[in-house]
Length: 482
Ligand SMILES: Cc1cc2nc3c(=O)[nH]c(=O)nc-3n(C[C@H](O)[C@H](O)[C@H](O)COP(=O)(O)OP(=O)(O)OC[C@H]3O[C@@H](n4cnc5c(N)ncnc54)[C@H](O)[C@@H]3O)c2cc1C
Image (cartoon, rainbow, N blue to C red; front, side):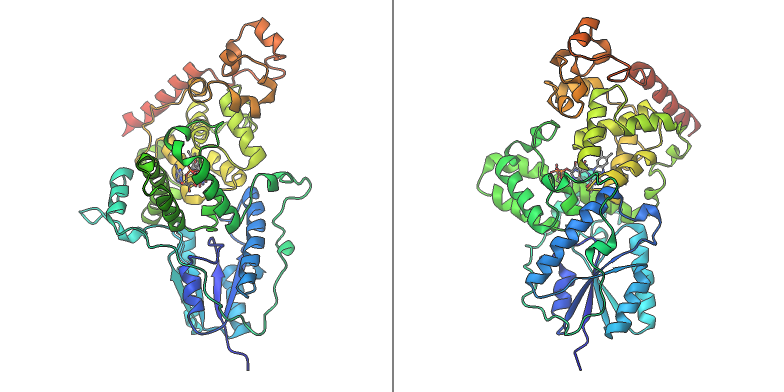
């Protein structure tokens, strides 16, 4: 009789190397059966959005290839996690299911329920770390509480032993002799159809571990030397673009940490850049840490007083923002970059988020949901914390009165208007001086550039000065109630 396998349940850890759970499964002395389950029964919020589904399709294809090189299959299923795993256990006789732990509240709860359900059938669910540099339980204040402020949190992380060096993929794990039924990748129906709005994305992105390594290599060769300054300028290719790869677990954060550290070793002029880049990975750690310790922030403001904030909830304004038709060129460029590519530069994310929540007084959750559907790196922890940070309601958030002026931000960080010209082509012929403020350009300048405000490009949907005053008044109303 064929030896019963152990199951490795893939979640957001779509790689074969430096994966403690897979390594443990492979060293259990039994054949390893890797599986991935697409759970379309989850609430919409917990399912991948449209852009993420595109990424997931290609990432699973890459994972299947990487597993194939180890001689392992990738079993695909669709349905409720608990039902599908119970069925797999029954079909194979497996006694142990391995997986990587997740810290998102619903995922962590699912692990607990699954653990109990499997245990009732005599099956063990074993959870392993692997998606973070530091496990959230390990980092505590001197008063044994959870940190709420980034800088002391990150300093505490850096006082810990450095993350272990990344481990190689398991060496020749045994594959099961017989396989239960599997769906094909196409059966998961992850790709967009009618229309296929992602037809050009394979030219922009390479999902999977090989793509992650290539992105990291490109960043180290071309950009890390100017990271601290370059990362503020949306038209430069100055950041790593590792976010979707990290989100889907195609590369481990400690592999990134060690590659960056090794690259910068012996180059004192790169030390500050290394420090800055690792601290951005630190923000990723912090977001996941906050979700673990304060799970309510997925839905509610971290700062209680913001639960009374008088949001407007204006659908028309939300739609103009989503479509990149606000009349503020940098905001519109960012929203259109997002729509076309599934990505938006970090500084522009801050500006469009500030614009939605403060200029338009639309709830941050409407923005967060749009990002969830449209970003290839949509990540519950980073997205929730990013939005709450900008809206002023998050832990260690930007003060509410820090209201970005999108025109000044454009003049400062896109001085020649390259970013705006690329994503808002109807403004391309405007001179640099007016590219961020077409509404103030003289009529003959607009005419020479072929711009007709209100026709070829919208008038600003709100006046910056008035919107700023309204936002401060709204904020004042919750402070006076506190
Ligand atoms: C409103 C808003 C929403 C956001 N939503 C997401 C999201 O859904 N998913 C996501 O991964 N990031 C999100 N971010 C954070 C950040 O914008 C992206 O991680 C970054 O732009 C990705 O580009 P990069 O990989 O080139 O970053 P790099 O500058 O190369 O940074 C390296 C890595 O550090 C992490 N990182 C960098 N900045 C942050 C940050 N501010 N917070 C948390 N982690 C960070 C990412 O994993 C990133 O890949 C959001 C930021 C804001 C302001």
